[in-house]
Image 1 (cartoon, rainbow over the protein chains, first blue to last red):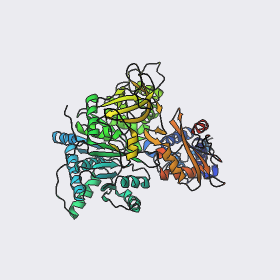
Image 2: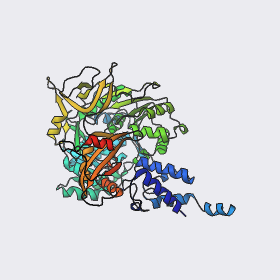
Image 3: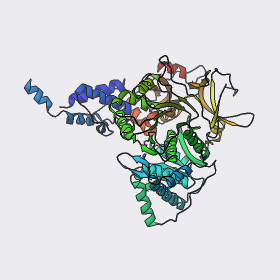
Image 4: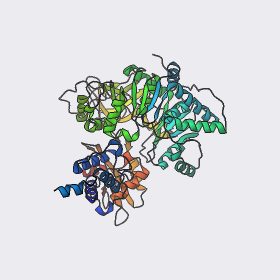
Length: 93
Length: 522
């Protein structure tokens, strides 16, 4: 269910912070903060991007080194913000 | 105003006068009163003396910013030693290099850093004594470590050392162009003369609440810690995680009722853009100080408009002199100003002059290098006599002028305006970055054949660092691999933004790397 998040975040990071990189090099588990890809300002940009794209809000304490250190972790965090709203939206449509 | 010879003397006086007042707050962890902080740092002094630390020695601090680290600074000074704070976020190999370079007799180390540090430093053939503290926070880590040490091996109380004015008080390591960090040696007189100048200009009182945003290995911390503790004020430690998060930081400044704020401009620019300042009450904030890099006028103007009440000061100076010129930002900033505000006029404990490449003073209005003399100017670089000699201009009267490397002009009103650098040092988020140090790190990668690093201005980030590389192999390492490699060898603020691969790097007619050409490509 979080594949759309993973894809969008991956594309955003590639275009913003890794221009020219082979997309295959950036996996779901590539260390982003501890690997020097995202600094504090870059992390902030990722937060703003996700909040806008997926209509979620992060609490300040959630934006930490752990939650944002991989695409996997980011998707997991976003997943906790969007509980089953997919299915409900579909059935009511 | 009383003049103090030793950096830690005013704190001791404040502790006697205001033992119950809160000295340091560590939000989320705890706080400590002046009397308690005095007693805790006395105990560290005694332990260090028993470990063989003597006046004139150096003692390292390798811990996150905490009450424990503040107590360590005071305890080391009381033992007559110079403190050497290292960046807990920097690679352990770099920190081991620093502690070995200045031959620390002991180090106060958080346990989580201890195994790596011990391995790295023993590989260098030395074994300083460690005061290991379980986990820094609220002073409890240090207190428990001292309790345990005292139970195992009691040591007697000693007297606080009253050092000579020219005795070293602290060594701050900055980026070195030769690839290794270099230690700037500051004496008690250097530190105390700066602190006294701050007292005169900012008139702090025991009612003030100072921010401590900069890390302790950064010279902005000298003002935060030593000015606050001189006046019986409260120092509010801002943790590294919160420090870079504008929304949390904005809330913290309001909740903690900070009255004197000091940080690099990049943090204030983030607050102005993303801090949602209108949500909070900043009525306690009376003074905003910034230093370390140029503040883009657009962001400064936005900040002053959102928070019109405090007075704003641009402080300027390299680690070698600490603040040497200052400028109060006019309110409001004139609309026709499109360039950054001036760096201002010389502080009263120092003198400044502008010289040409031959060291002759230029006429007012002409460009030249800013040189600084007086009580705040460093002793030199640790164990680097040649670099020290090159750093100074000695005039006919025998006076030593520190050559800042910064090109300035003096305006008709006497304010200096910063124009740029004469060498390859740049400022990023307030930190000094020698591009040569980045190149040295890149050359350690086995695949790298050539490395050249340039910095160009960037509207948003202030500066953009690009590494131009050529490779020994057909397939060059990925961008992700290069970033990961850099974080293992450099502090985060030195990792290049971009990496560009070329078959071979452009050369000048004399076969040197053509940096001008590379800047055009960056």
